[in-house]
Length: 409
Image (cartoon, rainbow, N blue to C red; front, side, top):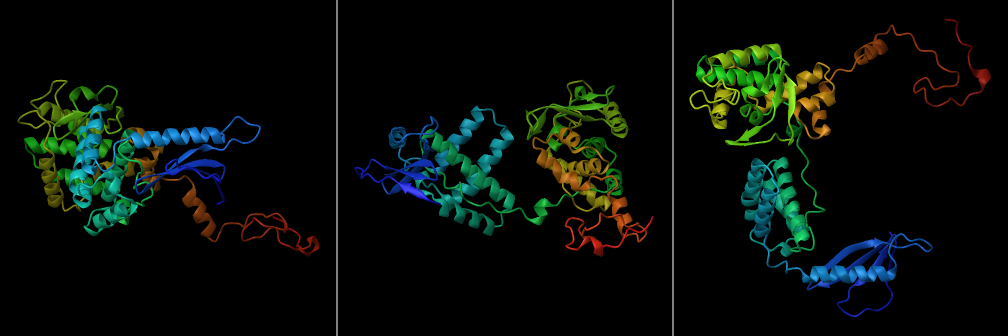
């Protein structure tokens, strides 16, 4: 990388402008910290694009005034900035469940390890030590990544507000996911039947039985299932409308922030019909999977205990309730459902998330192709003269009179 520095001597405290690969950068110091900011591309002679030297000087002075006028970074601590960020996100309508996770990571992971340190006293090395400490304490790579992501967001918010001048997280590597993080767990058909058969035949059991069926046959998240109302079950159209989500008794929108609908299979429709007839809560606005005694959403802890007990009675390997959603995803992919359709059914905001099921999708003709190549009966395809038989990509360096004539077919 070549760079051209300004040659004129400048007064102390006025900063400096350097040119690197056709881009102006400004540098100045605040106390013992050096600040560097991109000013813009250098204007080429005869064009109107980019900055002249005079324009770059003006932009540098404006940036210096803006940063210098900001509150000193020593006055705002990480916990102060984090708390203000959470208040801002709450005002912007961020989901309560998301805010709860942010607040937990801030107070349980970030503050205990970085303390009440001012924003300006945390550098990249400190963040790297934070990552190492979290990993050493046994936090999963995904959790560590979420904590670094939150710290990064705190600093970006602080920079926009003028509380900080640099983001020490910007160039910190996050831990890579482990093999377990990338493994999809799901139930086989016989395991699903065993799980359903192990559910007790009582008021709560009827609700749990239908809940497991719905999780496996719709791929809906637990919070979406618990927020489902009878008016969302479209019997004539054989669709289930996913409109709400509930977490710890608080209702909100689904994770993707928009509604969707999923097919209502015949077997699930029959199970929901039996539950509706047996339920004391049959109004359109009543919850489908309601607590049979109160009509309120089922408690997450009680669902977990009942689910784990049913798995144990059924002799089925321990998988999470969320893995019932993975069961739907893998089964639908294996049945040939297009990935885009599956994305809509499962409510994934990002197509990349749906692609975790792509390995289970069949590809027409691939097995027959491999079988044909290695069966020993495949007739060798006719090649053009002068091609490499092993790659069929590069011509052999031989004369044409050295080639054998093609054998008659």
